[in-house]
Length: 323
Length: 118
Image (cartoon, rainbow over all chains, first blue to last red):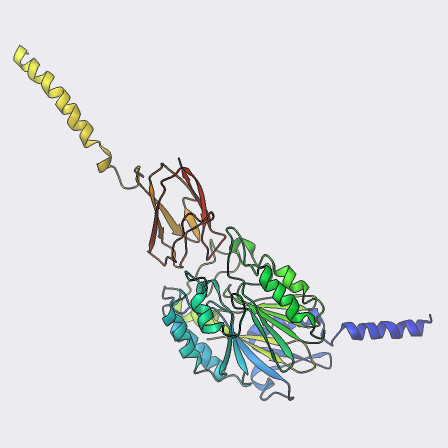
């Protein structure tokens, strides 16, 4: 084969493998997220703009954004945050102040603190004042206490299967809500279970490889810090079903701080809580609520804004704090 | 000493010994000494303390949550299971059979403990 022909083949292979987004570059871009900078990929070249100016309106039909909130712990009232109602309301105000209106919200669990009806009610009430009327939920371990998730399912599981897993599509992006907080075994981590994994395999089987995928679940689907239970023991199986897709974004909560990792075609991201912060892995005796001076609290709580630009495949994920 | 006083002293001795023994009975022991019937486990900082507790058959073990986060006490062999316990709430179980009873917190499964009943 001539050099020229080989070069052409190599070029085509590179084009096929790359969707214009260099993963390492994307990770570097994500490090700017805390400062409110948004990086988008335009023709394969990263372009940064100040957050406020970036997405006044979505450039193309088919572009959209949504917001992830997490760990509202309605009912918590200890020193780390004596008023979780106020901070959840502040999160909603933040959502309503975004320059690009989110189409819907994702709540990645620990909606309530003690699985009580009035706590779920309270959150539903507060979220009613959000500009985005549609909210998708997955449960946290605090939402399935005592009754094996019965009250959670009655309220949020109408279109779900098993302990509350489901999927839906928005403008060509496929969303998968997973439950990894049920039937936790002694000494173990989060768990998806065989039935859910089987469902997931079938759910994605016939999707085109170019379909962007967003998976959301409470406990991280990657090993953040196993000593504190920050991981899911059978997530590798779930991720194996997503190997064929060019763009996979995994959104989790549970750890009450932002953390991200890029592995091949998968971008993992955890959100802040709207209730209270938790210590960084290993920086405290235990992963419990972290007390900070009152004036610092809101700088450690926040929301995650996710933007999808049609044709770009990877989603731009931007965290912003409440204060 | 007269014979009479010796006789009085001889009578008094056993009475005095009895009084002393009675005063030293378990019902006036200090609180942190587990008696044959009650023992405590404190839940704090995402751990059970003590992690392994050894008690005689018939003991009622009471877990008290001193953490600022709710926890549960669940036997891995299905022997006992508490409802969720928030700060300051308690759960008790009386162990009427000898054996080893591993348990954990079903909300935070990395938290494990063991009651050994002999």
